[in-house]
Length: 140
Image (cartoon, rainbow, N blue to C red; front, side):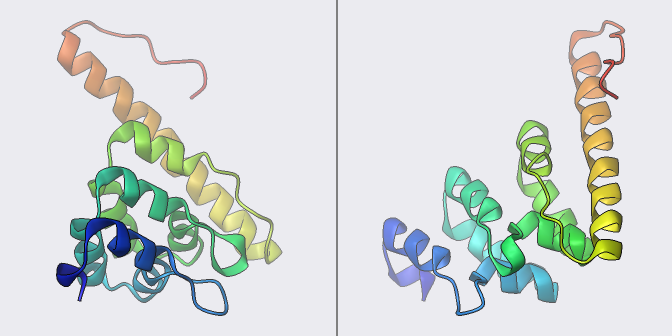
């Protein structure tokens, strides 16, 4: 279906949410359907993809937060591989709403780990491209 409609309409359809508030990407990530995530990724521009990742849905969670919150590793890996390190870090810095207390703390801890790893990865890549040893930033 997505192949038979123009780019703008495709993006509009992918932004549509069901009654509880989930988009097609929310549903695909939650169910671990990486194949559907890839179809969506290939159907939109990079900017549109990042916007879709940040759309809030169920319980006011963005797609990426929902993946972390419900520990969907394959979906998380696909998202991380599909965007640059800077975009990944930006997606991870979106505040997480306080839902169930135990799950909330686990999700916050996991997002903190992912943020730290993304920051370290950015520093190491910069070090490899410049050939200089760079100091590790204080914010780690």
